Amino acid sequence: HGRRREALKEPTVDEKEQNRQRVEKYCALNSSVMDLRSKSVFSTDALNQTRRLLELNTELHTVWNYRRQVFMQLDIWQDPEERQRVLEEELRFLMEIIMKNIKSYWMWNHRVWALSSLPRPEWQRELKLVAKLLAVDARNYHGWDYRRFVVARLKETVVDERVVDEQEFAFTTEQIKRDCANHSAWHNRSKLLPAVLSSTSEAAQASMLEEETKLILNAIYTDPDDQNAWLYYEWLVSMQPSDTSRLILLRNKVTAIRELLELEEDSKRPLIELVIALTAIDCMRPELVTNSEKQECLETLSVLQCIDAYRVGRYSDMNRILAQRWGLAANSSTTKPGLAVVEP
Image (cartoon, rainbow, N blue to C red; front, side, top):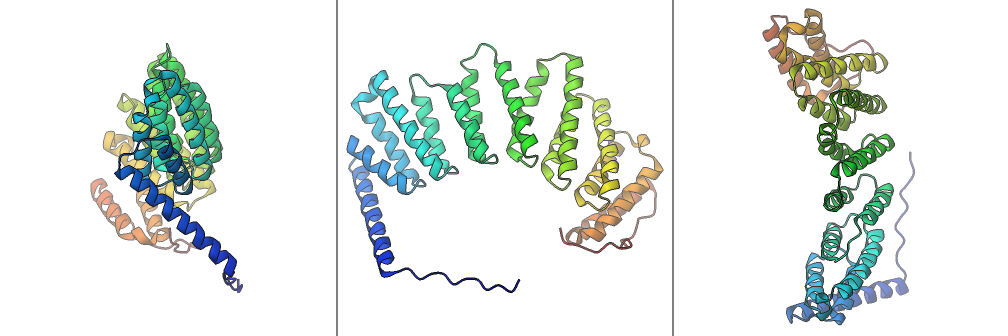
């Protein structure tokens, strides 16, 4: 409050000269690599120069492509032992790159190629490595995408794929408990749950779904306005085999939201989800939605018009449409006592 932003320090003459020299060296190295590529030079010198350039800039996809071409044109590439040796070294180099820029798409793409080209890849070791990387940056999309690749390859080497699925499912549980807003963990979980359920008995499936609901509700209570747990709940409802199962989950959702709203009565996302759940039940079994719940739904939409200024028209239209469907009077948007209109 009132503080002035400090002026950027003007570089000294020496610092300017050092920066100029660095830029010159980078441009010279880049030109040299591009020249080697244009002449189709596939040598150890080309490997050394591309490595030095990629250490300075990880986003040069053309250089990554050229580097792969160089490897595959070397005489030693045809020798499995030599190929194992040079690619193990390449993986160590890529670890250095990861430490500098863990979000580099081209680096992860190159690592996929290196592991796929290894005569004897160690997928379990790679899985442990990815776990350590995600411990540093748990929401890294590239890291999760790479993990899915490693898991798929690991499944090709084991006798029972279910063991790998169960381990991965447990890993997503751990990640969600650490950070319930981890979209990638929820997404991975949605890919794993059907496989895990299919390998268990009906009784075990019922128990797992109960635990799944607890995990979702715990995330919702932790951060009611985060969308990830809500979206996962919606997916969980949609993948149920029968209307009866879907209705049970929807009713559980309504009960949980009402309990949550007793603590945070004007939390926007739970209010929206309450309307979604009640209207979903109404679409499936209209007779199961009571008149008081219909009125509750319309009143909730009126509250949303007060607290979500950007979507007033949407809530007003929904209020009108539902009121016509149910033969009720639409609720008008009136500000609740003590409730200010706020931006989302």
